[in-house]
Image 1 (tube, rainbow, N blue to C red):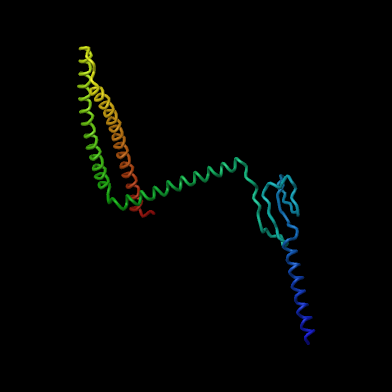
Image 2: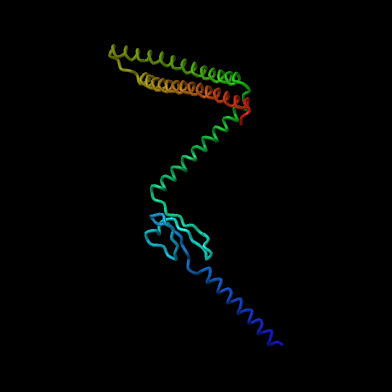
Length: 217
């Protein structure tokens, strides 16, 4: 009885080993490839001719079904084109997201075009006030500079040396005047930008509200 049990166990072990070997052989056996030649004719084989090794290939199983597709390697031009397409797509997505956020802000903040116009007026008045301050500072500096220059010229006519303090005042006044003039130019540009931005807000708000009124999405 004991001998029979041992024999049965040994037979089962041998059967499992044989089945596993057959399965491994099937899985690791020769692969079948499918490719298309330059004339558009489809071919099958266990090896691929060298001239078609760098194009798209399909790997088939024993039933003729595609189990894997090997993509053809990209050329430098194709890689560059793909990178360009990805960059452009990312830029478009970013722009669309920004526009969506702006649209939501307009609808959440304003109830009418008059509200936007009032907000625009408030911003422009604030910028005008800033420019008035800068203009006043520029006017004062120009007066000081003129006085220093006249004093310098007067000393020159008298053949007298120009004091170091006067030279220093001239240099610092000229430097501050240039700085304030640059600031005024920036403020003017900012005012133009704000004007253009609110003009765009009004146009977009009108588009959005017209779409809503027409029942659109």
